[in-house]
Length: 255
Ligand code: ZN
Ligand code: FE
Image (tube, rainbow, N blue to C red):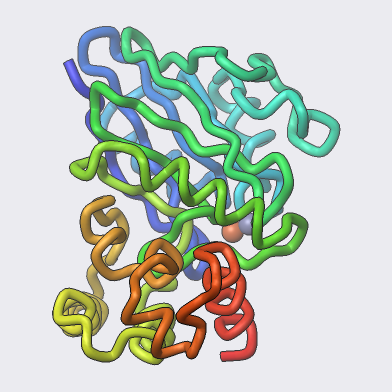
């Protein structure tokens, strides 16, 4: 059995995700930017929240956790290493610990970079990874705490997942990311079609999250620092992949 996954738009551009295990009725949520839209989606579907999965400590991912715990008694899961700045954790996760939504067993990955201690949740049987502000649709999170090397290593872990994995990231930033991606790789046909599809989706008011890992590998400049055409466009033919990644991240910060 695989998870039924529902995207919930929160605040101005955040996403939360409901993860429902039909075999047990367990329902998790990844991040709680705002409890209200999450509670109404749960109510609409007749689902009872059992678990709250937290990716990182930024307010726009945890602000509603306390309210949802009060309302539902759901158990919280997050990185033990970040417990000092997360809401109270019922499951403080250390390396190798499983993450369970009912009968569905997943794992977590340290994807530090945006923050140190940011984690992603991977549910292999559902081909789903929840990346929040690490790997994003056509982008990656800004480096508030980590180094470019850390983010490069984190994105490398995510890039090694099966290509059919669906990537559930934390924000609707794709249209802005698309403009930047075109400055790095204007002749990439996959990128050009994705930019067009993104514009059409946004014009119709549709979300561009989730995406697939395959799409990201083919179009996301932050996963493509090894591509020779990008290196030569940046005049960095002899630079290492991580040096090129660092340059792309720096350009995005200035963009
Ligand atoms: Zn964040
Ligand atoms: Fe965020």
